[in-house]
Length: 163
Length: 437
Image 1 (cartoon, each protein chain N blue to C red):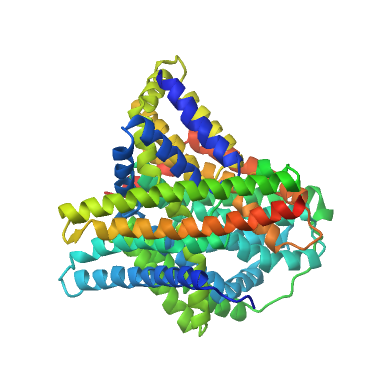
Image 2 (cartoon, rainbow over the protein chains, first blue to last red):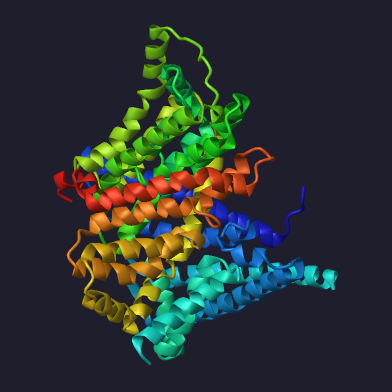
């Protein structure tokens, strides 16, 4: 069995959290139905918490899915290239991933800080400081950045081996 | 710059990034970042993008998506549906293409319980293809018939219908229910095709005499292994139709009913829960990460005037309205050959939906046609997700070309079904007409 590094452990733990959020979402939806129809005491927070969980599921699970190659892509064109061409295209994809992840990381961090320092609050039925959510985007994209970087160096090694 | 220059630039860059093999979510994010940076005043605009990423997916309307998928995955991984297929098998007599018909019947029934096409296709393929091959069935008919698992996308519950309705801003409950009759119509057309083909060409599905079973055994099995699934159909489709539960509530209850049913069959354990949650996460995260770019993307299209310009252009044509709808659907069929479903909707809906509303068509009917189109897209080579699923479960000597050949007649049937629904909208709209919400 392949030995897991600390980074893999973090990614897997985040995916585990996403799974927990998914199960909690099911439980909250059912609790809400029970409270509303049988106890006649609807829980106002349930809708909102589930919305936030959905958001959490996507960002906690995204780096894990990237590691597993589960983010869908179109390989019709690159399939027709030679092995060398394919490696270069993968290198390019990973490099683009690094750049875009870095951009989103930076701006989500800046926006989080702005929201934190000016005290912006996401007001629905619950009032939650906005930076809590934006920092999740930062965290998700930071891990995506690391994963793209890892893939970049993997493909770089493959390209060098061929040369 | 003119609006059409923006449109060509945005769509062109996006397609180029897709062709380069980038993950779809990344391609959207790049277009968003570039579009926002150049159109909305640089860095400040990019700060807005992070807010838009948050608001795109933290939405209650999307909540049924993971739940519908989880239902199907639980049923798939627990294997409880295998007995239901066995029971259907016992009820079927000696008819041409018997096992293929069994797969269509199984697919239709499973589609009323599962919201994900890929799980249904994988289950049918892995379950029935080995037996079909053993009975001497030819690949030209076996693979295509098992691909009817993609009906899960149309027959409620359907995860993709929820995404579609949320992107098109139409009633989720109505769109889900609208899929019921068209899904059955497609299943019936598949059955006709299989019987006709196997009657004309008996060598592709050699007839055999199935084992006989007593009526008491057949009825006993039906009550034990098929009827209980009615509880799930009632909780999900029944309650939405009756207006007693929202799609989210019925999806939540659907998951719990499914779990209880599996527990009653004594098949529930941690490994099944873990596998089902993992598979659900894979599909959900993939879809949701693509959706993170959706709000910004449609805002960019609107901001550049591309959406408005194209709508005005199309409406100004002296074309019949029906022809406009057919053209839009044809465009989606072409996009579906190389694009993934959620992204197809994301780039076309900001333009298509205003056109549909402007020319006065029912958006539910249009949404349903798009849903069938997405189903076709799951099966059209080279980029059909169900094709990849099927490739994973067929025997090693089956080439990709075998799969393409087998699935093509079924794609034609789907297109015929679309035409029938285009000319007879009540097939889609009859059931939703009874619903208030």
